[in-house]
Image 1 (spheres, helix red, strand yellow):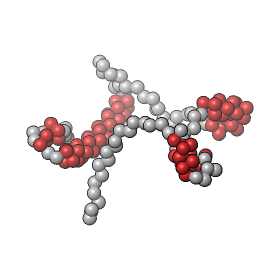
Image 2 (cartoon, helix red, strand yellow):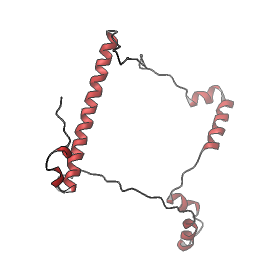
Image 3 (cartoon, helix red, strand yellow):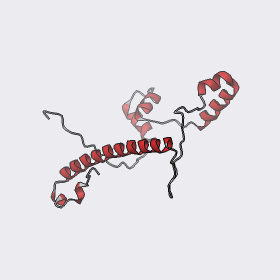
Image 4 (cartoon, one colour):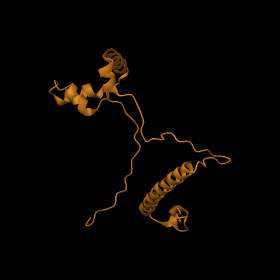
Length: 147
């Protein structure tokens, strides 16, 4: 047992500054992710041992192995193009029909580059713009030395 405990469960946590709470929880999350990685490796090792000993069942669990050899086989688009060019063309046509392009502000500037006046361009692009609610994204970064 590694002794991980969440800082928000410790007495006095609620009295800290919000930024200190966030930093503590960020460090805790990092420790949890390291522990998760360690546990996953242990599980894999024990599963490998169980498989080697052919002891792969409990009352509630059964071990199955998906990729016994470590090699998987999947279709390859370039092989399809080489071996069956007519089927490749059919697939390409079908996927192009389903393709939905994306649109950025840079794309708009390129698409309407023939409009020299920025005010005219703004009128055209305003008719395409749609408001999307955006949640703030908070990124906690450790300061570099000297900051």
